[in-house]
Every structure is written in structure tokens, then in C-alpha cells.
Length: 93
Length: 190
Ligand SMILES: [Zn+2]
Image: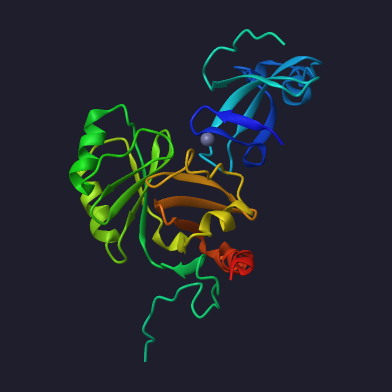
């Protein structure tokens, strides 16, 4: 168990949250103009980073808001929490 | 002959807690209106204050109270107005009139949840058995609220006083389960 600092509610236990995978994946502007392979890449392929990973979380048992987290996938430490629409912060492990 | 509709509570006739230091009482049918708007817009804040008597609280996890109305913070642009039984229609009308033309959402959710009031010297100890919130007085006190989990059920907890007394708003469909869980959790204090 660890605490996650919801940008809206403050620190809450991990069980109140859900992780929804890699953040900052832009939907292709014109899906009809790209190949099936490119569309599949957008839908399914993720970077699976070892180290600092930027991912989307939702406080689904609290305020139900989405936000982004920078997490070290090796140590499982959360290095930064930031709101949707904000630029990804530079973090160091 | 047509039947007359009567309001029934989901916890009617349910055996309660025998612990004097952790009493549970249902407060069914409290009016509950979900309100959304932009707290940075003074027109919105002023209109709510005019309609309800209190402005929506901006500080997270806090409650603004005016007479028998309470406005509970749910999120950065969302609140729950809790008003006495039967008053929800009047309160909704007052909000709609005051907020006419504004980009807001006003939804009467009275029948979605019921309210279990947990009261007594061991009330905090009962909650702590199933809730991950930091309920220590230095972190959570009267006038504060939080949405969280209690025994795996989604709840909105509002602390009313130092007794302590908590109002636990829970979906009606979870209320029998949660009531029985609370009665069981309180057993060791009887
Ligand atoms: Zn939150």
C-alpha cells in the first residue's frame, strides 16, 4: 500500500485509485488517412519503460478526476503528480 | 383502486448496533442535489450563495453550512447539497432560478443514496476498521467531508461534530450490506 497525492483531494490510499496506462498518447488527427498498422500502433503498442514512466490515473473512489503520474517502474516510487493538460514534468529518480 | 405510493427506506426495520458508544441511525430521504459549475466564476458562486445561503466551498474536503443546508465538496467543480427531507424540489427550483443561463449542472439525486448516522465515543474506531482515510482529529474533523471506501462500498463521509458523529451517504443498493457491516463492526464496543 502507498499513498497517492491526488491533485484535488490530497494524499489518499492507493486502493481509492486505478491506473489506466501510459499517458500523453495523442489520437491520430485523421484516422482515415493512416494505415492499419499505424492505427494498431496507436491502439495497442505502449513503451513499457523501465524507469520513469508517465501514466494516467483516476481517483475513482474519491473525486473521480483523471490526472497524470510520473512513476519509477523499478522502485514503484511516484516522482510527480500533475493535472491533465499540464506538460510532463522533468523528474529524476 | 390505485395504490398510494409511500416512501420506504431501504433500512426499514433493520436491527441496529447495541453499542452505546457506536450508535447507527438511518436518516433516510434527506434531499441531495448534485451541483456542478466553475468555482472561479463569481457569478456562479454568488448565485449559489443567494439560492442556498452559503457559497460552494472551494477548499477540498470541506463543507459549507447555512441553516439546514449543507454543501459538501466532491471535486474541483462539483458539490452535493444536502437539504432536509422534502425540501429538494424547492432547493432545486431556487438553484435553477438563481443560475438561469449559466453553464452548470443541477441534478436531484435524493433517491440514489440513503444516510447512516454513526455516533459515539467509538464511532471513529468503527470507521477505521474499514476505511483507508486518515480519520485522526488532526487530519479530519467537524466540517470536513471525503469520498472514499468503507468496507469496499463507495461512501461520502461527513463529520458533524467531535462526539464524533459522522453522516455516511451510501448508495441505497449498498446500504443494507453497509448497515450490517457497521452493526457487526460495532459489536466489540458493546
Ligand atoms: Zn481526488
